[in-house]
Length: 264
Length: 251
Image (cartoon, one colour):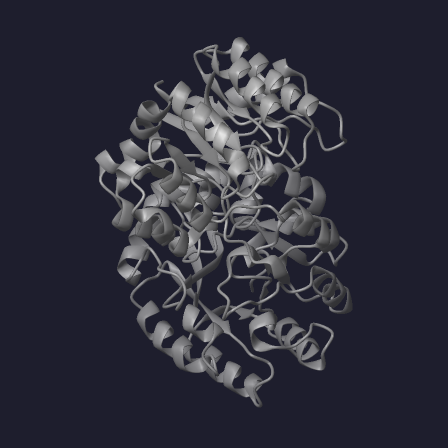
């Protein structure tokens, strides 16, 4: 079965802090994809921490675009933006990205809680360009975080926030990232929002959560993502392949839903 | 390749639904993955006030499954645990001892931890030390259990360098600290994640100190199996991780 992985980050930085070239990043991801039968991967950019400047956001997207240009049959990109930046700057970046064929979606991270009105312009762009928005979400235990991680998380969005966003923009298609981090409560939060999908990425492949999502949402609203290179395809595919489901459901999750969402 | 799973459990856990409701189903899953020996403990023994009741129930069923080897959970705060453990060892072939210091409430610099190590060493039983059973970020409000300190694990291993300690469910950022422990302190694969992570673990710990472990039933076992399959290590090193390092830990 050919697989589409909608949630990857490039191997942008080596352990010694040096930057990986675009060519080497493409080679690294293609090696992983070939090994595990992944046909196409969505690049979300090398976003490490919130609060990137406009120039840094552009650099992230330029890196993603350069990777896609080297392997356009295997890679596609999502435009990363920081909605805390001035709206004009955010919209200009989205226009610049989405008018070509390289970027097929929008990625939002931890910069702004998605109940904020500052997200409106981003969502309107997603509707205008008919591309999905992949939004980070997690019910994270703040006690388990150190001071630095807590600061990173201060504007985070939780699944109930994603549900609010989906209700405000019913024409938009939203992918809520990180099934395991959202958990059973998160699945319930978005169950009634037919314009929300959940991606399987993030955390180790704990049993049970995928089964619950299948029962409550159905296989048509679950999309495979790995969170490579922070996670491995070994562990993330185990979440799907270790869960009992029909071949049709597995094909929807691993391939068909992503193909339809991103028009691949 | 012979594969031994050092980190497996079966039973009921109130905050997670497991994939395999029966031992038959679990056995079939291991068969399909080519994992020939599984060190299995009772999940209920983590939370139940004493571990013997559910351990005994599980061990009786294991007689029908040669793949599964009994792992005895021990809470060293319970008076007379050594005597009861010896009694269990006389009734069943106990492959290893498993402990949960963060669930049972003792530090690894406490006398009870020393007594555990002494017992394990005297009876040549591997001591499986569970750092965590789940992801701290996702624990429910009513059951928030911090991980066992890897510094304390390394210190314990240095105090008892002849006890075979296996730290289960370590994250990659915890490996450097664990590597400072005794040569008899190993880690399992279950919580190591990211591309090339097995190779990286071997670089940090050394090949003799990495063992195969899935953390079934909490995790899908296929995750660790695939990590081993695609570890990009020479065959003898992969074989050592798969089973040989564990073979050397048992009598």
